[in-house]
Length: 220
Image (tube, rainbow, N blue to C red; front, side, top):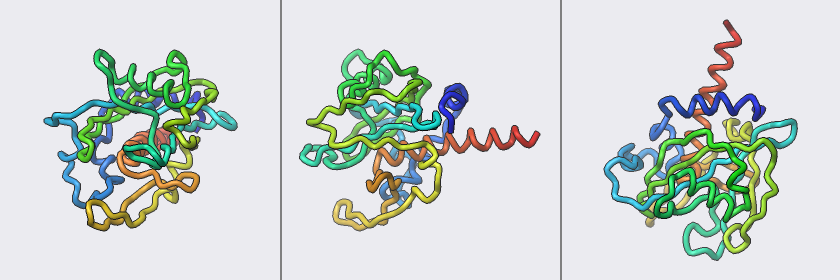
């Protein structure tokens, strides 16, 4: 996917009704048992957080996004893969929080990205957070500067990789003393699962919609 072509179409698509919880739950750690209401933010008393889904061009202007591998010694979600993100501070919008966290975690100039819209917010029962994924784009690869205390590595992921069905796998995980076959995206030797995988699942569904629209248009 060429970023320059994708940006205006994605901005328009994010303004329409989204795939939402039904797409997110496809990558839920225990999807077969997940009531959609369980991961909806509706009716929840929760802390609020935002993540930055940053799109940028790599080789041949192909669109990619950045994920972080969290340091193994962190108290929360150590060693896991996530979007740049964190708690929404008092007075902040999700967009402001996402751009601030992008700067604090990976050094992205908060004035550089153009916000395209939001994906569906996701409630995370174990941590009682409602997370707002904010999609933004920049027209050149940022000079990333990971915050070493929190970020062990960056994963730069072409959107085409996420759209490839072969990127989706499952692995056995024990959650609260029960073993599940947990779905994940396989990215550069890392399992991207949990809330990050669920947010990616909705992004992939949105991108697949755009692909389908392109194919329909080309047949007319």
